[in-house]
Image 1: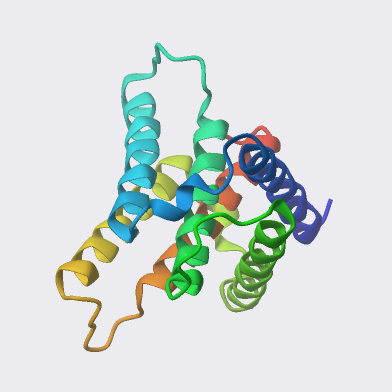
Image 2: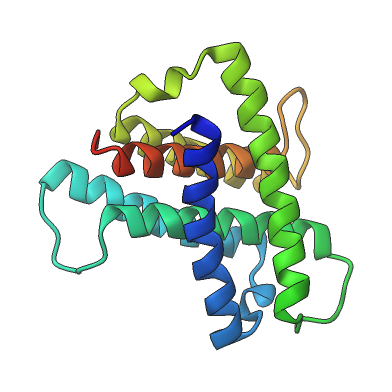
Length: 180
């Protein structure tokens, strides 16, 4: 499989989960503020790191399912940024699907551009590095929030969410290839 096919396959799995949960729960995630989404991603990344460090787990959800959750919360965070001016919290599944696909098209385009420049260096990275980079991006978002959304020369919250999404996809691809 090509990288694009592997990327699309990983995203399809995450998208299916997100849309099924939307059908089950509605758009309950719409009440989450940026810090709450960041904390949800943090919980998942911290659990992955704990499992990586201890080599054991007591809850059945595997590391791949946590990376899928990280990706989906990253998408929810970006959708929230786009929808912030809208008062309505309820959205139908088709509207959510459209927004999800739009976010992931942007994430995929970013991945393709970075893969061109970096030569798919992520394929040589460890799962631990993806976890650490995600945690680092979360700390960056928290600092940007503490700075009331302002940065002097750095990328904003959206760029960090996109990187988190792509790190999660990379981890899922390598897991699917049996490399992690």
